[in-house]
Amino acid sequence: MPAISLAKAPQPAATDPAQIRNFCIIAHIDHGKSTLADRMLGITEVVEARNMRAQYLDRMDIERERGITIKSQAVRLPWRSGIDGQEYILNMIDTPGHVDFTYEVSRSLAACEGAVLLVDCAQGIEAQTLANLYLAMENNLTIIPVLNKIDLPNAQPDKFAAELARLIGCQPEDCLRVSGK
Image (cartoon, rainbow, N blue to C red; front, side, top):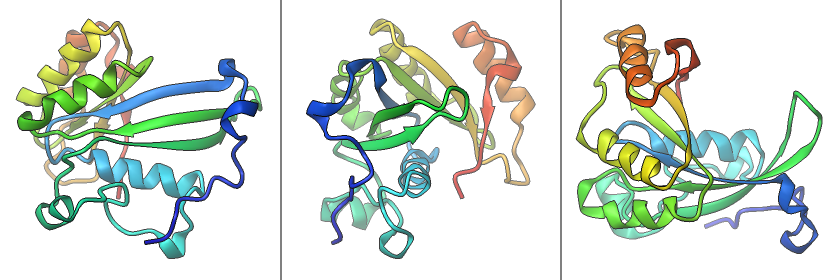
């Protein structure tokens, strides 16, 4: 398996802490956390296109066989802001979505300042969506609401943006709309 390359990223000791952002991707199982993480690995060029494969951060055989994340995985991503031109280091943690692995999520959230709350806008807000959201809120994290799978024919982004807005106290238009595919 090819190693993740951080050739473009400043080394940890050389990075100004003000330029580091630590965050998790949290969601119900199968809402697209690992697919979104894959896209971020590709966009930041941490993993070259020729080495990329689905669920890149899922390393255990059982994760690959079952198609679920069991163990949280962290990765360091270089990012240049399009707004201020500053270089940042994004420490991203891809977390499990299954209820049996809630402890993994809670430990990951404890190491972060923010969480991307991903909601499949065809299936909506489900039990682990709420459980993970409440864990993030208990940790006083900044919540970034993201509606995923907006390209599906049965997607209802307006409906779930309104529901998310009520839950976290934002405006429906503050919910990002994406497709990890």
